[in-house]
Image (cartoon, rainbow, N blue to C red; front, top):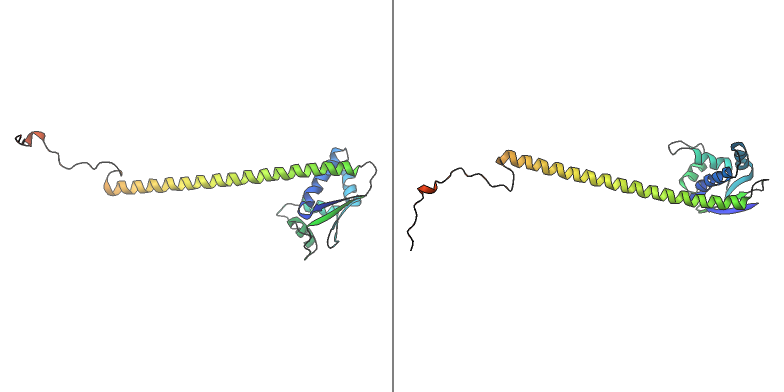
Length: 184
């Protein structure tokens, strides 16, 4: 039997990477379900509440908007211990011996996949934040452009000209009509 200590907020991600690592070794879907339901269990390091592999799969597969049937599953989805009031940050994943599965290699591969998934999620969050900032900047620039355009139109309608342009003279002076002053 192999025991792995993992942070509770990474439990579902590690479980998904464990499933991926197992499937890469050639284990089919039916065997994977059997392994997760029979040979894998998790328990809180502090309070000892036990979570089955099926419950972890249920949390991992359910979409964010889907209502989970049990409060402990809801807490796991949020990254907390399944027991209400437990402040634990760690879970132990117990991997029972199974013929044809080298848990050391599979868990190492799962750690690598989980790290890659976490890095990818971090990059995705950064990209989404950058897109959100760019959308906000575009809206601000468009808003400023609209305000400036409205101010120009308002000035044009009130004064009959654009700002910073010379006001046309109403009267023109004929240079021939102006008398020259004698030189001194």
